[in-house]
Amino acid sequence: MRWNLRMKAAERGIWKSTELRRRLAEAGLEISAGKMSALWTGTPTTIRLDDLELICAVLDCTPTDLLVCEADKVAARRPAKTAIACGEATPITPRLGRTRSAPPV
Image 1 (cartoon, rainbow, N blue to C red):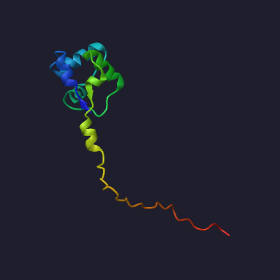
Image 2: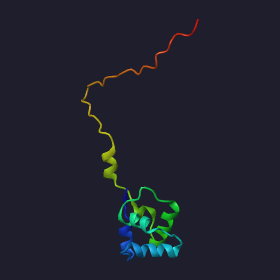
Image 3: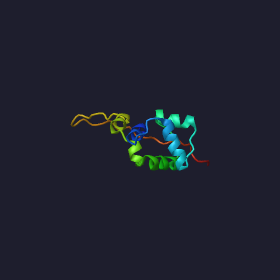
Image 4: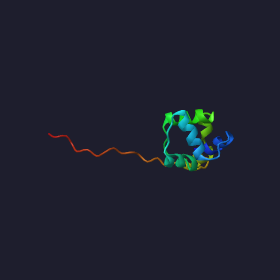
């Protein structure tokens, strides 16, 4: 996922994090300077849904405008599949359970 806050803010004429922080405060969301800086400069690891909803309301956008899925990064994280030649059998390894002792006599 790519965090697209700065681009959406720029589309609304908001060029500084302090301006967005002021507008969010007017809407009822008090954000500390440190948290605002983290939201503005990087991708947040977590964000409360209530906060996301208010940010979207202030920027007149949807969460999908702020959180952009990057399919190529998702594909890169998948394990590589090994190609099997036509007619070549894959070896089957039996899964053996725990060895158990005999019940008491």
